[in-house]
Image (cartoon, rainbow over all chains, first blue to last red; front, side, top):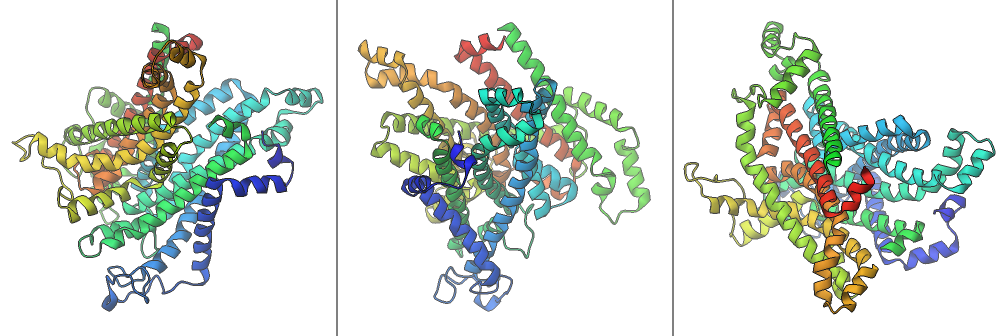
Length: 288
Length: 320
């Protein structure tokens, strides 16, 4: 399935195919833009995102303030750049939680089968009853609003998704003949999982990770919009939208920029995921 | 069919019990003293102890869980601390908005997605397909609450066709009318539906393309059916299994999405009740509302499982 991926670094042929894949190129470019915006905000922003200037509030886009200013006179472009950092942070940690715990559970279920598999999958079913926003609401109801709680809630929501995807792909690998050969050589379940199963499901996990990353950005934006996620003064795209909504009659553009930023980030990650799926697993791309 | 239904029903009950344990553990046990949370950090220890006794928090957790669950079965959810009224009454009042909103959104989702998905599949790799799928890709990336804001900007601020928020009620006693209520829910339903329709359109297209390659479709065409008749009469029914699976999951997302979208439009639904109850630290309301939403998600998935068997008898046969 993912021989190219598991064996070594991408070959020149892979790179050639990647550069000709339109969705992959657009997705990679938009995702890179998100990372660059976040990285740039660490060293430079046009204005300080925390500096208020009430005399310059609600300005339209100008040469001085490229995307205008908000109700506190803060530079919108600078807020967007720093907001990218926030989105990446949430995505990386939330996907990290889901990927590490979910993959481990999925691999365990596939390796042990029987009641262990049944138990893990039924537990995954229970958590599926709580969409990300619902589990985040439970967390914030108990522990209060904040970025840490929202990251944990989104991460918990990711666990059953990765567990299911891992188990389904790992089960397919476990039924292959080379696993039987590895067993015949005396390798134990743990070693087979690490040496044979995991490398062969890596492409599926990478694709799923990009999709969950996009979902995490959307969930964090929704929570911050509700006031349950990132708290002031830390800039966040979701909260910028909630602040802009109260000023729709005076400054409608304020409600446009953060949404465009979220949509471009999510679009980029989704296209990247689609492209990677086609490139890493040609059988799937033929099915589409 | 009987055994299949029974097995699924037992799984449904087990999932509901599991979900209720999760909700109870997170919202009743994890916070420690719920009375302290309700009254805030400045409350005197005596007042907290009195409220704890009133809420029955001095009883063992297992007994409290049993009382809560057995109350739920007979429709007794306890009393709201902030609203001083039965939680059931509050929930029923809010459901009269949230359920029609979710159903409207689901209807719009289904119509848009099936039309777009079948259209794109019928024009596979042509301009229509690329255009519709490009739009779907953008639709998936748009946060529903931002789309809601854009709808308000266009239809309320610019064109002034709709009000920017609020809900007049379904009856004239409440100060509204069915038509006005429907109008107030239309923009929120569209905001909820567009993103889900984009996802479902992609699934529909893939499923239809898969079935179009089957031999029986060629046979149907060979016996003289037009492409349109074969598409709507034979292909779509056979492509419905993955479509219905995703629709089940999407209804869950729509219900969760109402929490955000109701807040954008200031609609007094279940989502807004949960949000306000968190602000009021009214954990009793939060617990029951979260359980209700989770139960709806589980029940919808159960219905989807049953629908599988009705649409495709092979599912049932392989399961037993």
